[in-house]
Image (cartoon, rainbow, N blue to C red):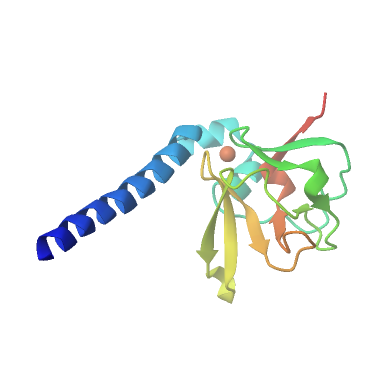
Length: 161
Ligand code: FE
């Protein structure tokens, strides 16, 4: 009886571990990481883009080129071209930065707790190149209730063909 219990425990653990590995490897398989040195990023980004994307800067509110942008298409990471947000999820949050209520899919954007500047926020980064995009807040509209607040300087736009 005891033996049986141990065997079932081993099998159960195996299932759990296999399940987790599968999930992680499938995410890794989808996302080919873009890794560059600071020097390399500096040569392919403008100083303003570099400051936001690689040094977690924030552009001044109401100044970004995509704040009031209403074209139909896809917003991409300005550093690596990863598709991040669909224009259909963009809305005017009144904050002064482009806002989206959802990412294109959950594998595109990573989140991380950010306690800088005496605030508790959730930073969002590009899952492909780890560049800083902005922050996500829980005061967005339905259906997600999320507000992905993104710097225009972190974005490129691909119009729908
Ligand atoms: Fe990127």
